[in-house]
Image 1 (cartoon, rainbow, N blue to C red):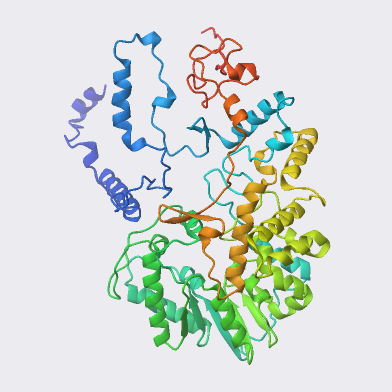
Image 2: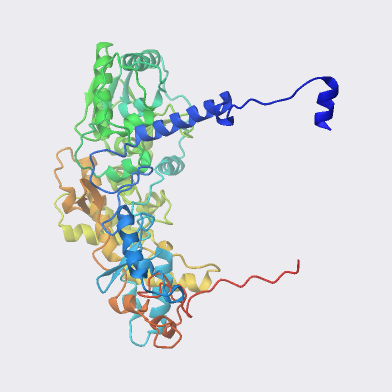
Length: 580
């Protein structure tokens, strides 16, 4: 019909021999995709001079057990093992395959590292321990974490549990009933402004087509418009290991731009977030911006490390003769300002963030309401339940230490000990454990391990859902390192001459980065770890199978079967027959 109509009308409908991929729309899309890929690789250089195996998308460095980079070699080994074997008799064993970076938690049994989900490990260990109640003291079982890493303090990736520091501000305002939104001082009065340089760096958006000189001028114009000759404190971003390494990794999501040696006339082609995620870039730009701001009349201060203590000391000195206003969003500033010795005119903490609920806080007024004791121990109250270098305690509200210090005598005594200089390591660990027992609702005479045992049976008795291992208090072994990290951070805040070495206080140096110590005990007693898996050469049909004997299904932890194609593994349900 189509051909007939074309013949009648004398028209012809033809298409060119041009390929569809040569059209303008396809070429435009290909160009956009190529630019997206280049931008991705620009911020995540796969050819960086780094010998470690890492994910270029997340920045996470692989453990020694990961060998996915040898996939070709492992594959040839599997091919060799398949020779002269019938298909129906050959089994692909998981232990012969590559270990990828998706594997996080592990436990060692007889020298072999097993990859097990933390919650699965906990459930299997508890099941086995319950069946061995006559041979094994269940209370002693809870002296070990029954997971890897300690779930109450670490997330499954091994990073410290992230603190929700912003909730501390809300708890503080609620505790003092302060109206934080009203204007406490007249903006036109005699005021000294002290700015957090780190907050300032992230506040101004960058335009990709601007030179670094234009970007610097944008900051100058903003500061001129908002403040009169302020003091600005910048962190010192050196390339050495820091207790904030893990926090920086989490914040950047592993996206760290390459080191750029820029000059004022160079156009910035990188995204601001990626550029500043590189500590060398951040240090160089902070130095450059400081020089530009100084030429404009600002007083710029560069700290050796974290600038929070420097900013607070500067604000306190300014508040002797004038009203001082600190501009910043970091909760650490709020904590240190309350700890500082103020006997002067008003000192305010203000936030320019529109998402902040409490935009202005009168520090002097709030210190009066809190009292000298809380202000003195405030750095510890902040650190024990999570800051940039310590773990958040799962299930413990950020504001709970503020309430406990007023109502719990044991907690108060423990805190005062931790805030006293010259205490031994043993005293610090013991006081840290007592503080954690109070925060988890323990009684006098309880130990953390005993409290874990009690909480587990309470949850088993009354809970309608599966007991999660992270809902239990940490063990004494894990709490020891947490207490040391808390003490180190608190002393670093309150003592300007603090020279404590992180490696002696809950940290270990690994791959050029400081990582938190987790625990010095295995995840479970050796007897349990051996019984939670089998090494059957057969199909696991008899009670000689360790898993079957203890009422467990075989799993990936098993030495031979790996829970695959054996008679003691969970088989998929057969499909229902359907009539077509």
